[in-house]
Length: 374
Image (tube, rainbow, N blue to C red; front, side, top):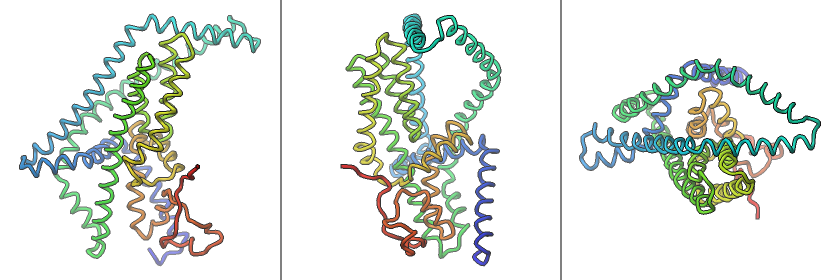
């Protein structure tokens, strides 16, 4: 392939990328559970190795970590079920609060526009009917999606068990793709990939814990209703880079509006979320995850949107670790090294337009992709 013209090589790369995306879109129901199981298996490797050192049988060394994950998921499901039950009990008060907020909004709209109460109610009724019709048409699709979720969850433990059990076969398969003189680079890439995935995923679990405690605890001390629910929802949604925090803010505001007839709790919730996010982004998370996942913000956001459009919510959650693994592979492959530089967060210290040495694939002086302010 080195003898091909540059345009042919780039065309082959783009065709390969298009073929890969096509395969993922067509087979996402099969591929996404496998990818999720792969990342969870990497995260469970330390527990598996610890149990093996303690002379546990291999099957038990795999089953026990899987049971820990199942227990963690069961606790999350129980928590949300309990919180939904509390919201259901408060429904009459929530309805009264929402009605008051809508009336206040209606009065404000009447004051600044020519639309009166009757016109607003007619508009809301029309849109409500449209939403009901849309909900009816999507009911069948929702049932299919729900069954898909159960299949997804049911397959995960099986895939995780088999990946841990047959991991040596999978590793041998990877090494057999390369000539022996490339095996040291392959080994190095495997170790770094494992390190990045473990660091990232375990860091996210720690992040969920401290963000729930910080956000939920502060809101609870202030006296905000549903404080713990807001904390958990925001901590989980924050796993989706950039986009999740925005959705978490919106849900926090909506939950606060439904539980209060005043506006000061909303301002308080937004202020506390901003404070906790500042601590998370600038102090806590960099110390926990470190600088192992160096993906620039542009491709982190693109990865989230592409992952969401290709594979839904699971694609959004897995976007960043997938991009990080691809960067490790690209950085160690001469043919794709430019793609690794594109995904990375380290900018050239000088402009490639002015300095020819910064246009080559060899290592160059770099600076952080994030500007530091005093």
